[in-house]
Image 1 (cartoon, rainbow, N blue to C red):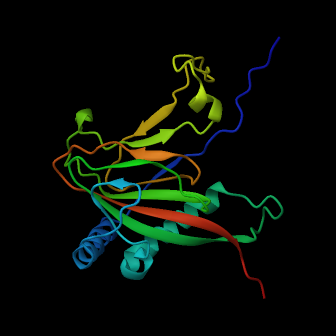
Image 2: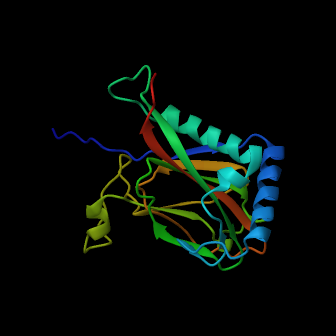
Image 3: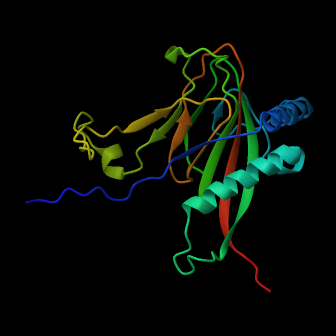
Length: 213
């Protein structure tokens, strides 16, 4: 009898920011930086405002606390195979803010050179409206080449439940949500069609060997 095994799962972690005051402080620092630098950057964003990647310098204590939380999440999900009880690795963080209005989106991309990437939602922009037509979902693309390159898109691999595996997964953001995933996972944001303003913070964590005395 054949064995049915599912290998090489992709981790995706969802957690919550516990401090409403911290979320408010993040919003204030992002608003101030956007006023100082209204031009911002254009990278994966299609419209909207993308800050520089030095948010740790201008984001205040709330930004530092958010990075600390992301590094704690990464520590929980990572093990040093040669030294599992005392990891030899630490994290170098990079951090920036995104502000999106109606019609803005982010194209598919990865974060080369980093190990983990995280997104925290300061404001989902939905203003309490659960209408799915408002879009703005975080999109995750199946990273396995066979799924992406198959010339018969209606032919799918079966999952462990026997159902067809999706090639793309949608996550609807919520204010206070933080998600983390491997930096090689292709991700995008569908066009946001809400009347509010979407505010998020992105973090990259690069693994480095710790310096020992």
